[in-house]
Image (cartoon, rainbow, N blue to C red; front, top):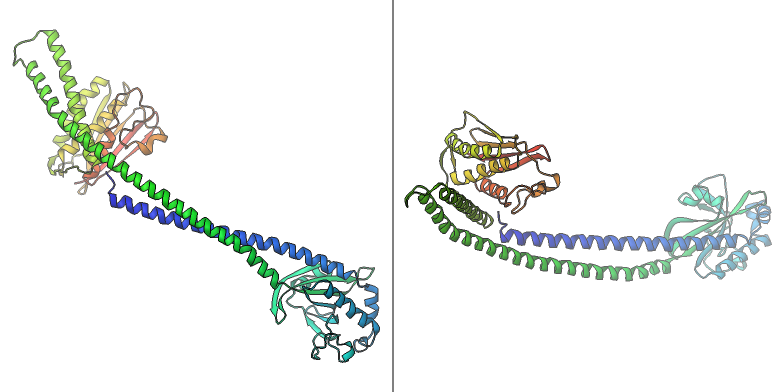
Length: 473
């Protein structure tokens, strides 16, 4: 019944590891949650800033003027002064915010996956006087060249044609880590004639997120260390207290064993002396004297039973139950038990019956432990059954096991007490009007398990209880 020290230490170690893993996982989840929350918050602020920026910039352009400009053939637009004014306006947008890498105007086409360049702040024209950034001349960004928009969700979904918005796609190229925003340029009748697009380098923003996340990460690591340290410290303290309590419990049980063993001898001597007195070995007594000594003999017998019970409890608690298997005639054994219990049942005015299978014969069991099991179960059943109630003993066997069932129509066990009913010194909450010490079922469980058996019960408050014991034979 006593848990081995090694098992307790192993469980403590496992508990420590589990607590450490749980705290680490919780802290990791916290770190990830804080990171994504911070990133989401900053993303929302960035989106709001870019939408405000691109929508404000789009007000610099007139839908009617751009519409009139787009009415000219593509090859002639470069020669028009309006193209130069568009480029200058785009360049002013770039200068207003140093984070803007590109600013350009796009023309919608009949093709959903492509648009045409109208103008770019860094347009590369074939004419040097229009090549403001003096870069190498290429066709990229040249008015009329195609711009692939097949992977731009804001344009593919049509949202960018209705209102200023950002594109969730972040891409990296030679210029850095870029994030885009779009705003439609409309005529007064609502027709979209062009799209303003700006690309912002968010490399610094990305570093800001990481820099913001760093304190969270450090705080979380410190939290993990503190929580793990506290958990291990508490578990270690709990372990030392548990070891101390186990040692005190062991010493207490040993003391109980010693005391009950030492008490058993003088109590037994008293019981024999009273038997000798009542048998007339020291002369005859009158009726009153006989009744008096008879009561004393009953008290001595009760004390002897109690001392024996305490001794058995201490042995079970210390794991020192000695099993002495002998060939036990079960029919004769249960017959003796029924003779003893019938007297108790008559005294309590309880109807006692038994059914013992014809297959029950000789079994290799410990007679002393068997008496502890059966007598305690039947005594409890009789004790907790009111007058006129019924108690029944059923015994059956197979080649492998013996089954003992004790049922009663007593007060039953409340549901909230059922998981503790086999505990030492525990009594059900509805047993306050019945004498008892709380050792009976504890001893039953210990005696059953010492012989390799199992015990269980079924009970309902106010309807009685049934205890089932199975033992290998």
